[in-house]
Length: 336
Image (cartoon, rainbow, N blue to C red):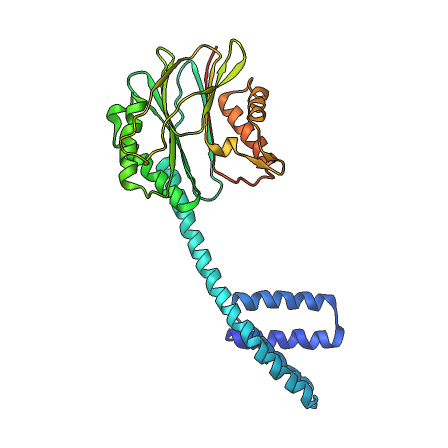
């Protein structure tokens, strides 16, 4: 039996039963009928026409003024019907778009995927969580044959698809210039020229790039306007900022970046992050730097991965589980 005939018979049963009983259970059945009608794209004016027809069958002597009242209701509901059909169309488009974005997000995750190196004497943890489906943050580890690990962390100022596409381009630009990977300042200069030529000027990109020589335990690094990280002195149990200055990528293709070095001792830690960590917002305002450092102190006895996971959970809870920006945190500990 065609759906419209089934719908008519079902509605006749519901209406007849409710006229006799006025029961809550029948109203509930009516709600289920409504949802089924929406799923099958039955318009409001069709329901009203059906209601009028069935009432005339049940009450053939129904007063004329009642019959005419349905005519004006039908005219009014025509507008609702147009709006309903437009809503349905937009909802279908939204579903299709969301499906495409989810596919794109999965592709991006695969493209940007990186493996945390396992190196004797080091404990490394990393977490990166997007505020939306796609991530505007990026981090990457590369272990080479010279007993070095390169660590990159970058942030596109912005969120959503444009930021995610831009970050994917950054990843492949980095892969295409491996010759200067051991010199963070030179890598940023090369990358800066790529960004300046290929990224829209409305997009701003920051990056911190470091090279950890685990044979000598020396950390070389340079920054292109990225959020300052922290250094933990294990001997004195003190934190300090990892100082590094540099212009954001893509602003001036002739920009030079300064390279810094730091000796890493047993018990020391390097903490790298995006501004989604330091700019966590609560009802009282931004989370203070000291609050973040207190969380690190709280979990300092844990492994590096446990530290970043626990800090994310605590800061997420502070924000009522609603990230306002992409969140990326990396910790590198030299084992005692």
